[in-house]
Image (cartoon, rainbow, N blue to C red; front, side, top):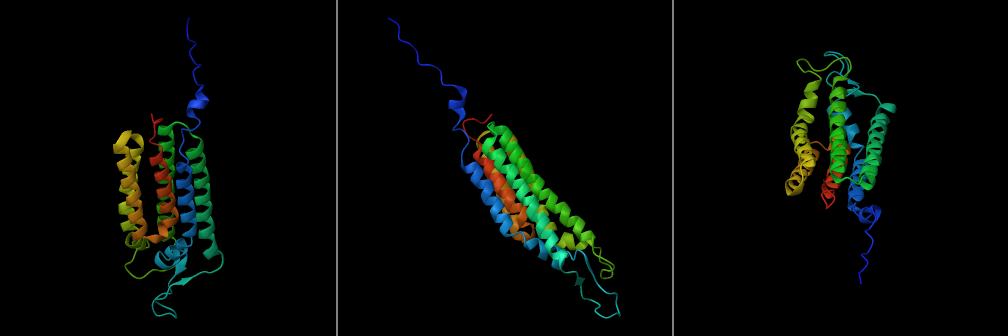
Length: 218
């Protein structure tokens, strides 16, 4: 008398509980934190980088004082930064919640994090060049970027490189490298809070990538 073997579980039954829910929550948490800090970009652009501002020439009325526009010049950076944050967050949630291959998910989430921070650094670099008319004698517009954003960039760029390496590796080393990347972006946020709209989102994306180191990792 032979004992019938139970049927093999179908693939969907084996994988339906594979993706951790925390992967999605980390992305959402980073996005919400970033949106709460998006207004800081206005202070960075206007008061620190003086983007779109001008300084009257020496000897004229108002010399030595920055004159910046109001209205749309205040709202536009918030809208642009907020829209980018929402767009990246939506893609990140879809990747974190739906992409079953762990390695592919880690790489995609890390790429989104790198893209968010890199685009913010390039955006502020370009904004620093848009100082209208005059600047103090002997000062190049990008001087403001180097003094205000440079220290944060020096920390953020290596942190992103470490995170990319971590996303490509399996096992415990990858977990440590992704954690180092998250910590580095946290330091960059402290050094320049005006970057928070990108760095906080990126930290959430990297934390989500770190959760995708489970049994299904390839």
